[in-house]
Image 1 (cartoon, rainbow, N blue to C red):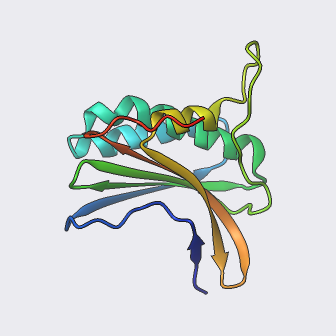
Image 2: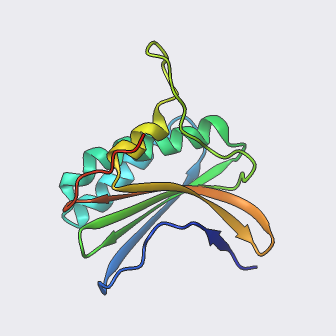
Length: 155
């Protein structure tokens, strides 16, 4: 069984090396904390400490969306650290039917800002459907952080 993607993040690079880290965890309320620790360790191991704060905020929001909205038992966090200073993070789940979208939260709302915040902090971000040949089998929310470029502010 092969997996294809639609609208994937730009992970190809002219640079030769990339370090890939992957965490599979249950989709529970404590997983956001585990994901923050995981991404912190991956970035620190590759001397990308300046990206840790934004990466933790973004991965927390992506994981929280899976825990809250996707009907899955587990999720996967993948971190790809490129030698050009860019980092691609993807949070995957196996629920293709519930696609995330940025919402406009009221000023007094306690939630609803996650994807908007990811879009503001990341250099690039998106949602990709994962396919098993002809049918969707899951999705991933991905974002790119770069030390050498300001975040893209989209609204």
